[in-house]
Image 1: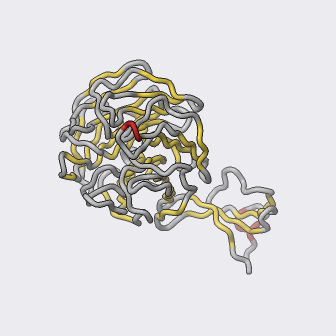
Image 2 (image 1 turned 90 degrees about the vertical axis):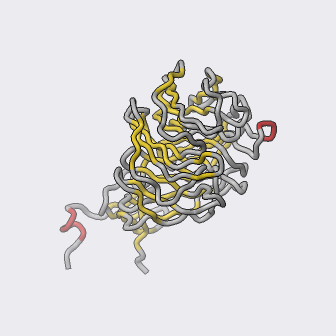
Image 3 (image 1 turned 120 degrees about the horizontal axis):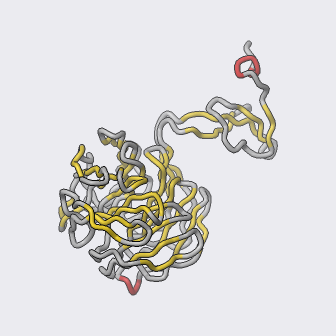
Length: 322
């Protein structure tokens, strides 16, 4: 029988904790848990239960480059006098309350990371916007169109795109860290759009609604113009969404009536995959692409958090030696 060393050129090493960046196929012994562990790849995507928010709420904003480093802020129930200023930070296991926003906001949109984010809009219809530096929120210039329920994309608090909004709008606005600039409109005016994209020149606007009509329309932005691409399989609004222009995920939302449907985008087509466990609308989103996503909160008001690990993702597993 072949030995592990003969195949991989190294003995199985012992660690007190799992190694920080194991490669697929690496095997080690975790002395703390007294378990043999292996780094493998998933063959199918799945949602798993994460740590609950400290405060259940809906129509809140989210930001975060991965599901293990996320931010959730504001939320309802609306209207504004009943909305929240609460901000919570997620480390992949638990949510921790951090410094509050300056203004109560439900139906607020967010973009960026858990240390550099922007929040804009809300049910005040004033375009109230704030910037997060990892510790505090700072009030910035209001988004001029004064909407709520925007779609949003962007890298951080100096590079963010907000589009659409309620009442149904086709406006697109870019925030550069100091001022707002109007860019070319999306083709179909709508609110409750799912936004994805890590820079303002590579964004997606998925679904949404005009009045009571939900749409499956998806548009792609190149920094200058919006172009329609292939539709979602399920028309919806107020869904979770994350990822890039070529690798995105949309999940949950209303069709009307809340849905649990999840769809993956590969840059050309949408494919239905494993549903979220708790159907809802208006939750906060974070994540990297169609293999890494987070959904927290939502309506009906919940604190539930779910983590998505897609097919082909690198994951650590325990080897059963009994």
